[in-house]
Every structure is written in C-alpha cells, then in structure tokens.
Image (cartoon, rainbow, N blue to C red; front, top):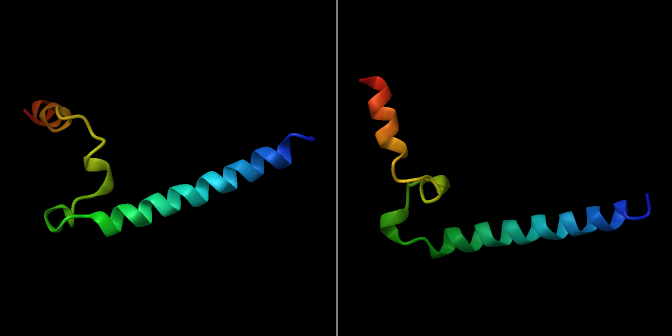
Length: 56
C-alpha cells in the first residue's frame, strides 16, 4: 500500500504533461492540417486499402 500513492502521483503528473502536449500540438497545427483527426498520423498507410478490399 505504501507504493500506491507515489504511483498515483506520477500518473497525475503524466496526465498533465499529455494535456500540455495536446494543447501545444493544437497551437502548432498548420492551416492545411486543420480538420484532420489526431489519429490519422498514427494510422498505418495501408489501413484504407484493407477496408476497400473488404467491400469488394
């Protein structure tokens, strides 16, 4: 039980960092990137190709 509060504390710290990164990311967005969802960049390139194959 002694280690739990410190783990929780670090978790809170990381959450704040992530929020800050998100805020900075939104500020830095270039005009052409506005409107694209966040996870487009993390999705693999062949993701959309697989979807098209399933439809046919």
